Length: 427
Ligand SMILES: *[C@@H]1O[C@H](CO)[C@@H](O)[C@H](O)[C@H]1NC(C)=O
Ligand SMILES: *[C@@H]1O[C@H](CO)[C@@H](O)[C@H](O)[C@H]1NC(C)=O
Image (cartoon, rainbow, N blue to C red):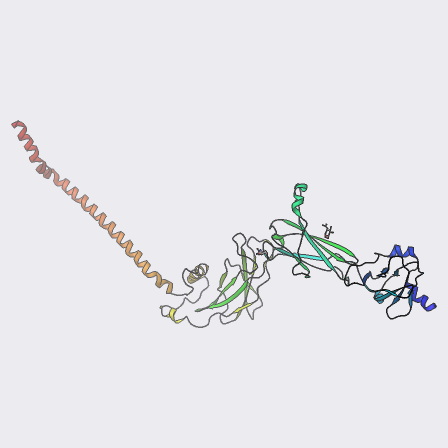
């Protein structure tokens, strides 16, 4: 009897103290049937399932004959454990007065939810996702209710806008993951995310204000390729693509930055290319180089993406390809910022223009054009010269005629006048 009394020492007998200290009466509707939950360190009340309220029952631990609480305890069909600790977890059995098993209860202990830790991220300009983790381990089955509303701007007509600002469900994708996604968000709007952690012992809400344009962080560019440029021992050609998660749209472009270094070298060099490719002109001949690229919204919203996976490339050590050498001159010694550089940059930005091939070839293509232009200008010049010559000749002739005209005019017009003179007197 004394041992049974010491065993019962943690079982509260007084109804009043029990009711005051118990956090929630008979938590249920969580997890598998027959499981009840309580908070570690607090008083826990177990309900005998399948017994009408008020029927007196006896309580036992499963497999132990020791009576925990008799039917005359005043608790009727409930068992009260004070300051529950982990040794109290397990299976309890309640029996009715006639000795029949009223029910079996499995007790699980843990903590009520703490406010979850929430962060949100956007890899494109229309959708964002929020992820969360427990602020404190509860050791209990947990659900999350996730919703969001659009924040009303200060000064806006709250009544009018209220209906259009939610809250809306933030669907959890994939189901069961600690992540929910807001689709079709407005780039410039503020949103208030509500992540409420719920477990059998309660609920706790975290609110987080986010705007797409501040959390925007694109995925790294994809398909980075680094290739040598034949004939140029200090050049590497790098090209990449938009991340697949960033639909290409004129209003939402990405800009890029490229970092590269020889494998043995600890320090990165960095450039900010304009397009989807770049020619590195100061690579170290013969050494493999590591190249990475990252992306950011063109107008600097959000932050830079993570660096893409490394791509490796080694500048070309071989001579110019035969077809280039066949053109005649050797390359220009690969000075950075030398003339072919300009041609190559232009070629890179607009591939249909002159080819990447360095050296005299592009010039070859231009020779006929220049010749045509030369011939044309020569033609025009000679035409002009001829015209001018003709003009001068004409003037000279006019002058000479004019000078001779004294006599010639007379000689020319004379007969008419003389005719006139002759005819007039005759009339
Ligand atoms: C936003 O998500 C939807 C649905 O997954 C997708 O169709 C759309 O392309 C996404 N928008 C952007 C800009 O990526
Ligand atoms: C957050 O969500 C929970 C669960 O849906 C809800 O009970 C609570 O009122 C919400 N809180 C706010 C501030 O919206």
